[in-house]
Image (tube, rainbow, N blue to C red; front, side):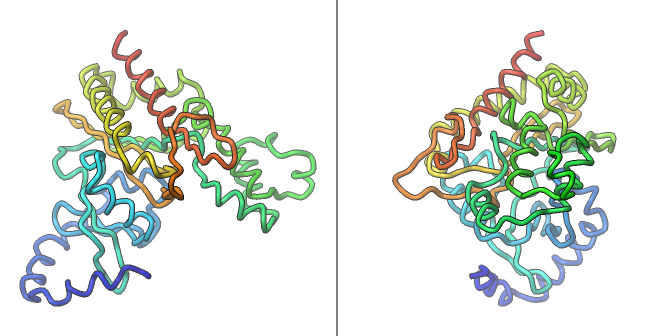
Length: 313
């Protein structure tokens, strides 16, 4: 099912009112899309058609059934205040989209950071599928060499290709995903500067430097973020959703502006998978293939520890 059946009632709405809303809200949003939604550009998933502007205060993300199921569940969960508001499936130009809250609507010239959480960013089933049909990938070899010419083995150099499982596991060792349980995907500051070159940001001091730059060394902003993360941690420990889902490839979106106000949201649930009952996760146990642990709370612990140390200086 594409979920597009859910869009049908929208076509029955008063057309003249819909046209007026389109004129008032849609046109200016299209014109200033990159400016209006800079966070979309950060995480590398802003390909053509993935996002569209919605009515005022909303954004449309290309329909993904898994994400739709997660967001629907989350609207009734302990984590509700830490995820974008979800407004169902809508159709635009013959395609279906999940309609969500625009998290930047209330901020003035915000600075934004995307942190990918967990000790791995691929699902166990992706690893299994890649092993079932082993295929040498030249594109992945080239990506590997571009980052570290010494990373491939002599055999891989000779083949000028690597297997996908090998690439997936190697990629995680480059960044702080492996060492700290999270990695910075991108930072966009209020002045318009954007940095997504964090693939080799691996150790704690490098992360501290990136965070200091992100908040312009504002202790107030750091304290506000730390308070948000403490509240999130409590909500995660109470959440039924979190207990019964493998949360992989999901990010924390950090947003603050010149007023010092700061918010954190969980975003990106396209790879989040419900566990077969009665299995649950603690999100801290080290991952071994088969246990499906994602290390999400290990990453959150690390992030909170770093922010605490920065505030305490």
